Length: 111
Image 1: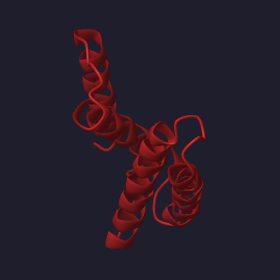
Image 2: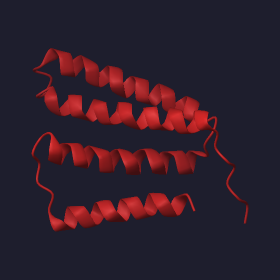
Image 3: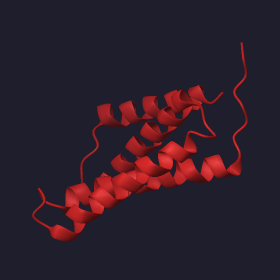
C-alpha cells in the first residue's frame, strides 16, 4: 500500500483557511434570513467564493480524497457547534452520534 505524501505547513494553512471561510459562509447564510439582510447575503458569497478559491490551492498539497474529507468533516462539525453555541440550535443524541462518526471517519482517512 502506498503511503500518503507528507503535507507542508502551507497545505495545512490553506486547508484550515478554506474550512474557516466555509463555516463563516454558512453562518452568513443563516444570518441572511433568506437574503433579506444584505450584508450577510453578500458576505456568504464572498466567504464561499474565497473558500473554493483557497481549496483549489490547497489541492496542490493534499490528495483530493483526503482534503475533501477533512474539509467536509471538520466544516460540518464546526458548523454544528456554531449552530448550537451561537444560534441556539438543539443537538439530539442521534445528531451527536453522527458527528462522532464524521470525526472518526476524518481521523481514519488520515491514519
